[in-house]
Length: 417
Length: 175
Image (cartoon, rainbow over all chains, first blue to last red; front, side, top):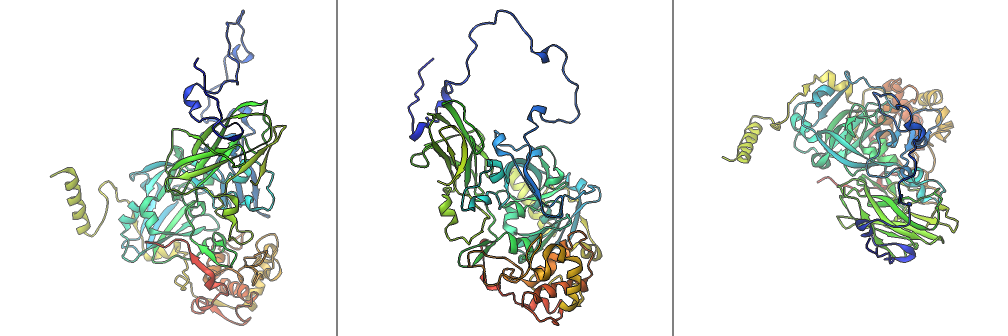
């Protein structure tokens, strides 16, 4: 076997990303070098295995991998938030059962045969579509991220919260979203001149309502019917939701019921009093839709305990509401030096991108972090830069660099660096 | 004629007929009657478009609030297990900004729109239009925006100027 160049390319043991293209990092598993002298069977190899199933489920040994910090507002059971356990996942697709959720008045139990999508307002012909009708339209599917604009909001706290990666940052997920381009339905209804916005309403008890610019709708909005190949899960909008690639999750109205075409926004409760960004001078910005360029190391991350000193793979996620991820850099010395991470093969527009980096941990203290750049040239800012000029408590659209500290004993914690 | 040109001609022909249906669209939308449309249209615009008939003031609104809202939002909207709805005036530039109906919300119509959609939390849709105007008036009154006897209606509500109205800018301008 050829000698691998394990000379660090950045401080504190970061190795050249091309090492993965060669033969892997030595020092991990011990290879079996000789046939065992007597053949043996494990217990589970001595009898035929379990029965078939008509509905898949994860291994019982993985039952600890669940949505995190599931919390409802007082007096409710379905109004609140749950987070994707990012630290347990490795890849770019988020399993549907683990996709984060945010509901404003619980999950409605919608009868798909009775549900209708109505398009009205500034159109020539107000139209109603059943689910069966929509299922006959030409569809598109794309693998893309969905992120709540409140994701990572805990990172504005004066002291770093000691919670896991998923608890802090798990309001993001990636799925294959399939459905009907909304522009096709609007064309059928005939949008009148002067129209500039749509107002999308949901069929939940709170009738979530958001105004969305018509040009975004024409660009790439879909009425999503499918998530990861199956019909939407109830918590993600069954039987249909608005999906706006790269834009804040709240605007991707679930349980989509009506679309009113208008010449101006409706100034709904969520787009004015909630999802608006207040600065320190008392000025608030409305309609800050695209999610900023962002990345974080998911493994190792808060709560991990390192094993013996040696080779580790740093792995994480990067994404941007402005397009593809072009580059992810990682640092193992708190940002003093950086090395390029290797991006997994699937680098898709407005999608989670998995990155990996080889790190030879020397057993001493380290601060690891990642920094993403998207194809538009946007570079993920530091925490200090994100918070500059914001009002106290303004937590939406936080995309600062996340640092994790590794102690001499191998404990990994959340730090600001 | 190339396939592409043929499609362009076909598309132009369809537009000429008064429709813009893509040639791979099955065109299955069902037209709606005015009554069917009115039943699903909840949108209320800042200029008052969409507001129903009816009226109410803060005097009757107080009773409705105390019966339906107080348990979660506290006496006079000062907060309980859920959002604080009153007070916080002048706090936005301070160390603890408090975003209430009075200190933050830019449009009075939004109060009516949201309460009609989503409140009372356990029984949304249970308040009449008169009751909705009354409770909206009450929330504006406890924020010192209107007088206790001011009557809110489709005509008067859009004319209420919210104190923080001019402190918003748009982060996205449609093309």
